Image (tube, rainbow, N blue to C red; front, side):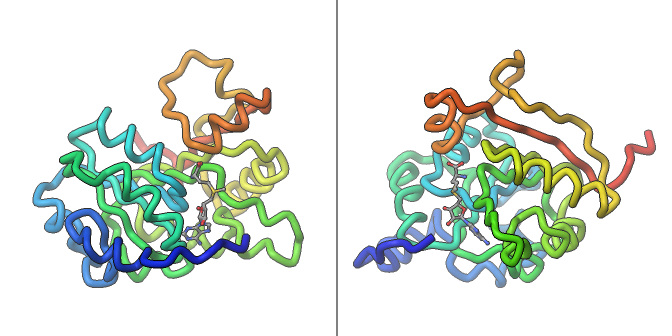
Length: 212
Ligand SMILES: C[S@@+](CC[C@H](N)C(=O)[O-])C[C@H]1O[C@@H](n2cnc3c(N)ncnc32)[C@H](O)[C@@H]1O
């Protein structure tokens, strides 16, 4: 996806260093220190305009959220939701998830992947956020689960196969999330797709079976 550069985006991000982290490798292994508490840390990769993380942070004040986005022109839209709102359990990180292992030790509880880019061409499969190369990184940083939502059935089925081949356990799976009576926070893309009548797929997966 090509994005229009927005003049002044980096300056805006820089001027809100209470919310935005532009040097995330420096917090490897010590994100809790940055939040100033030992609450669980959940991350979202590809947060887009930030609706999901904004609402989740308000609903769950005892969980810390780190929202990662690779484009500055997109991250400023998320940032605008947080400016002057006194939400202290969110950090916005400008970073490409290809190098996720450089910013986290095994210090993340859950990972949210919401409406990740599908990269439909086989030659781009390695860019899908549920490709084995990403799962390998997630395994080193996540303690609990991956929660994945998408409108794209091909990507959903690919992800189930990729996770299963990797030895992950699929704990929950649905092809019509909104037909279920479960707590759900909608993302921007989810709202847009479901308003068009498109069904939302969701899965929850873990790296190992629960021994308990
Ligand atoms: C289709 S949008 C979905 C946005 C939002 N999660 C939602 O559901 O409304 C995917 C977002 O992921 C971001 N993204 C894609 N690959 C990424 C990567 N490797 N690292 C960080 N962000 C990424 C894109 O820039 C884009 O903003």
